[in-house]
Each structure stands twice: as C-alpha cells, then as structure tokens.
Amino acid sequence: MATADTTAKAANKNEKIGQVVSAKMEKTIVVEVTRRVQHPVYKRIITKRKKFYAHDEQRTAKVGDVVKIIECRPMSKLKRWRLEEVLRKAVQVAVEPSAVDLDMVQSTAGSKSPKAKGSGRKSS
Image 1: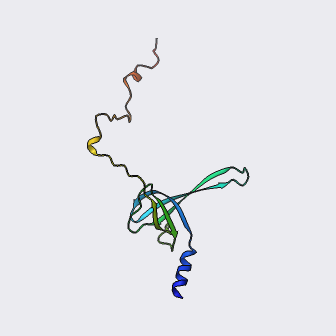
Image 2: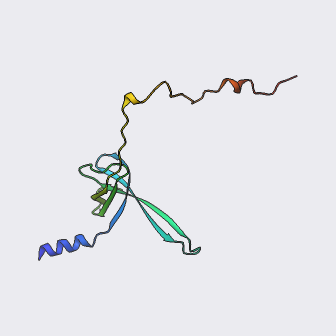
C-alpha cells in the first residue's frame, strides 16, 4: 500500500509545459510557460507568460527545447520545479569558424561616415 500512496502523491503535483529560454546556469534551466486567457473586462484573448526556474540534473535541456516540468520541494531561493522530460528538441545550428568571413564584418560602433562630417550648416 505504500507504493500506491507515493504514486498518488506524485500524481497530484502540478505539471507545466514550456520552452527553455536559458540554460546557462549549472543544473538549472529557465522555462517560459505561455497561456492564452480571456481578459476579464474586454473579453479579448491575451497571452500571459511566466518564467519558472527548474532543476536539470543531467543538463539535458538546451535553449529552445520544449520540456515538461513538475513541481517539487524548494531547492533554492527560486527553484521549485524539476525537469520531468524533454518533449521536443530544438534545432541546434552550428557554424564552422572557416565559413565566417571576417573581412565582411564592419565595426559600426562610434564610427561616422565621411559624408556626415561635411553635412553641417555652412557659415557665411
């Protein structure tokens, strides 16, 4: 009977499905959950978004993945969720360093074009 109680408790935990927006921390991912609700006054459909910090022990989730998270005990100040499973992997695009042409990249920070110098008002 003890096994039935533990599965019943696990079934009562909240589950959410969202997209990973950050995986830069150690064993922590940030999942953004979006939902569409009707505005109480204007009756328009609006999109609400909320971010959840989830524990990812094996670091399997990457940015853009669609994941299922389940609530658990507090693990830190912000982490109250853990990664249940990765539902859909995101397409990871890799660029070879030899494919990038550095001559084509121009620095535009703080530089002005030569035409901009002479475009001021002329004094008589």
